Length: 455
Length: 122
Image (cartoon, rainbow over all chains, first blue to last red):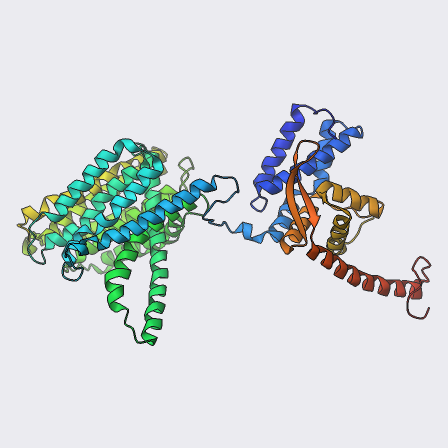
């Protein structure tokens, strides 16, 4: 039917029209193709009737109807499209569904492997109830090597495998060779810090050769935030399932408690890490990232609470009452503030000019620093009374690391607000600082037990 | 002639089904047929036909598949299904009832000669 092609300009116009169409969420590419076929036929008929190409195009577009009205009609018919769907196979047909399926298969296989790995020591007589300390020290080692393996497989970055494997081997050694005293504090510290140190290895594998770049490390930060949220959601779902399981089996006189303790919970907790990671990877760019949304909600609230706290301290002159765990509490506060900073940074357009939210962020940073300074002051004044227990040294070290991180972030953020620095400076600082945490965690694992005589 | 939007929306289903009952077709050709049949009175906005077709496809009244047309472009062809034919019969029954009622009123009120003799006393 077609008259001779009316030249590049018509093609360009149609291309442009198609790109407008594709921006509408309710109109998928197949629909755009169908509409384009219609448009082309209409244009062809009009040209055959004697219109010039551009006139024909204009008339055809006009007849097609206003884009807004059209996409509204499509949205009414396909309302599900306005909810971005995480489809396990693939969003668009023809977008390598085989690869997506293979990835899901690998992820679930690794999840099952992690669950099996948790139970492996039982074969060697290490019962979960009697050897809780062993399981605690090795908790990260059951899961994180497999997670690392998943990313190595996915990114095909095989050059680093040897180093990653070496890292895990060293971790296995340090988790298991030290002769800890029974119930030793340093052993508890190892349980807490080893996974943090191993996080670095996961990050290197996740970045897949981009660990050296700010963007690569920033992606890992984004990933970790989403992983946390997905893990919590899976855990909630698992809790509901467990509740029903316990209830229905109790109704027939079977107690699932032993099964739950020794199989369900440990295996589920291990496997869920892999499944959550895979979900984060699969839904990337499909669903809005949640971590930045939560930080948007809570940054103002945390800032308000901290400012009120400082105001109250100033007004009433109350000193900080140094209880046993107050330092750890303030450490956690700083961790949360770092988290708020990191995840809101991860979603910020680096080239956007400073805005109200950035000012809020600085208020949060400065007030957190001041609150921590108040607590540190109180501790420093009485440090000799307390002595240097392993817990206290670890907490103090963490506090210093966090303080340095936050203080310099505040300086850089301040510069950025006053137009004397750029946002990428801040990003670079934050992402460069990540390994410091892992290194400190490694020091706690490796140096503390002998330094404190395995107590 | 401007036809009320609601009326166009309500009539689109039987019109599209009836046209497809004549034979398989695709969007542009269906619209051409509508213009022909209505003598140009029914002016649909072209794009609006497609959500209607997709709705009928979802309901199972029509089936669609992509074929390469003579022009060499890929084109989505629609075919009426047996469920669609049943729906068409049902639509036809309803529209005839509406039509009969309206004709009755027109000839009573306005002595509209163009209306066929209504079933009621005239």
